[in-house]
Length: 432
Image 1 (tube, rainbow, N blue to C red):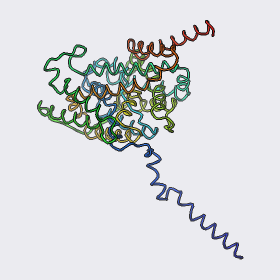
Image 2: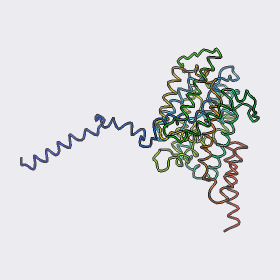
Image 3: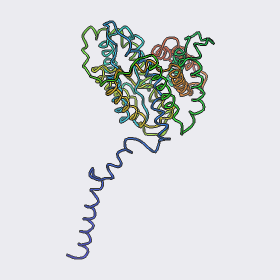
Image 4: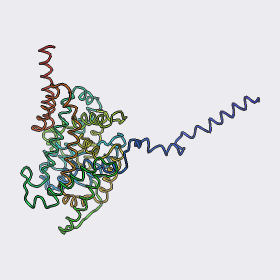
């Protein structure tokens, strides 16, 4: 064999030696897995991600705790907090693996408005399953993307601003006095009062722009310490125990209640706010990034998560634009925040369970109000493009905001679209 043949053989051996370096047995392959899951180059700081993961607690805690501590018509508590924490934690983890940005997992609010104190556990779960099924089918058939194309941008932005203002007004109701605040001593000098809210607002205003201070995390940590102290002073012992999961038995009567009462408001809300608006907001907050967030994938995510977890007593969840705005405002830029939040919920649900409900009853309402107000303002700010452009679009945006505030999200979208159609037909009739 000549020298050239030996050289060729050596080259082939070199190639054979190089190939295994890209296989699953190579250390380079395993070291690269974290960067494939989380875009670490987009991180501002780990502290900000930690803070951002708590940005939607102002939406999550009130609804979940209300259902965990309220009895339904059958005399049982409406949801199991331990099961809800476990499955929302799993939902967070799966969502974090599916998307590269902090897509939140939030309680379905329209179901909450009709079900609190009125539905049994089975009826709530049936409502969540049906909403998930419809949403999943819309995603599979790619009709959710069509919805996004057909919706006027001014209507979507008006919906975002309207939801933001609605959340802001609801956040203020957590403070003493409701719609009639006063300078009464008891309304100011309590942990749920205005003084703590003012101080928390000042702290947030000074630190939100900082890349080193995890604003939401520090507010949440402070609130937990206060809640623990209040619980201790009330003489209530903390009793945590491992959660025991059970399968929810849903009867034909439960399906009937869910179909006729539970889902009417939630389906359009999920389609518009949890799918279409989330995609648009994601593009606004993370321009130029490959996030994996599309109407079809988000719809399928909402559908699959709910069709599985409701059978074990987890409260129905969706992806909301308000939660995304809040998490972004408090510093989250990647899915790392969602993965960590999911792990925390999962561990709390497994090992603490329903004992956590007692602690959260003493959570300072003033801190919840501030965190929810900040998230609401961020959502309003995200819809600012609707207030720009030609006067007709701005009017349509304002009209959708008014409809949303007065009649709710689903009526706001429908009436906004009707107004857009009327304006378009009028423009065509009048000509150029």
